[in-house]
Length: 238
Length: 258
Image (cartoon, rainbow over all chains, first blue to last red; front, side):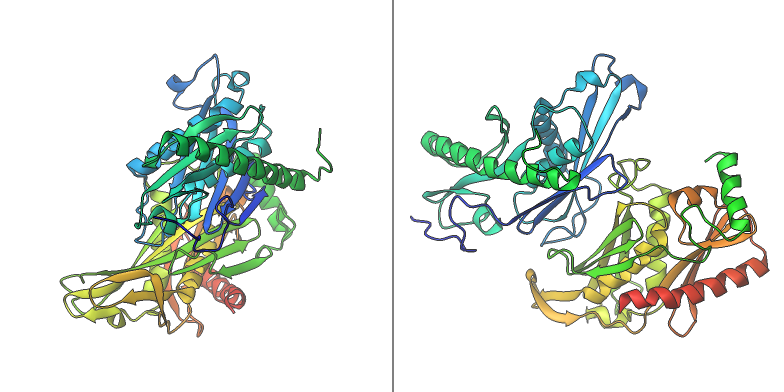
């Protein structure tokens, strides 16, 4: 079978419309929002701050805590019950793992850095939007970072490898689909989030990751631009 | 908040001043209502009061009626104090603060009778509309009560029923039909600090408050819901004055909905 055309007219390697903004939650130490089309993530960072309960404290390094949460009205289907699900707990965990490599938590003994990711509106790709917003929020909070983290979902719809699957593609049923959310550390090109559900060949996976890296390079530029806009930095800010 | 800080707020109020330069009965600016911020809800609105931002969304479900009210649908209000919006809020199940907030929002709407629950009935004893209103905080810079009540009402105004064919709900399609709202309840919280009254407290002022009274009023001045908070009791004279302030300020806030 052949997947000829994306419903919304995008090219196969094109992400949905991206909007990124830094400094959206005034009370937070750092914050940002990131959109892929109708998927919208807002992230706020608090910390480094003292960690309670005290027995969790580690005198050798700080702790990164991430919490991914869909707002009750953020799904096109039924209301999302507040309080976290198995899914949201797992996403919180993989988000934490995706962000960890760029932080230097040795600098913050006994402390915690809290990252709260909230989704007011979702339509596929919410964990990747959340990671993009969170990494900008961490930078906005002024934490020591080796790099940002850029994330997108890639995958296979029938015979095509595509970037940033939307809801229609995730639930495409005229052929096989694979959804592969990835996060890239742009400077090294390494991968800090990789999940997949669906069927692909090894070659397709390779192609998808390559395409994802290219898409993340574009996202990285958008993230940097949004950060510079908040701080009024001109040029490359080096 | 230590005693010195509280004393400073009281001293300022003696000469009708506040920490941020406002008069005691001034709301912060802007007071802004943005309906329809999310496409996934049947209705939504974001409210900004100064730096405070809250979001409200409406989802609709078809459910079975309560056995004692077989011909009526209902509303269900929730509120979440997101840890993203204030460093003092913690993750986890809603605490008493969030529960009180949800119940104040709920009562303001329910008791105004702006929604006639009988009109939410689809098939008596079997199918009724449930209107689920959720308020979440995005940035807590004080006065979540008034911002949340305003957002919840604005989200109802923005809502349309999803398509329902008698058996299945189709959230992907709106029927285009609005929820019928017969009046506009508006909540104003009046706070007492020392012997002075203020509205629209910041988070610092909230910590210095002796008592507060949230009053929901209709356009014609009828009161439809109240809640007293804070540790200090109020005199009957206090209550009259606070209700007067709430009614006057309610008129002002009403403008934001238009």
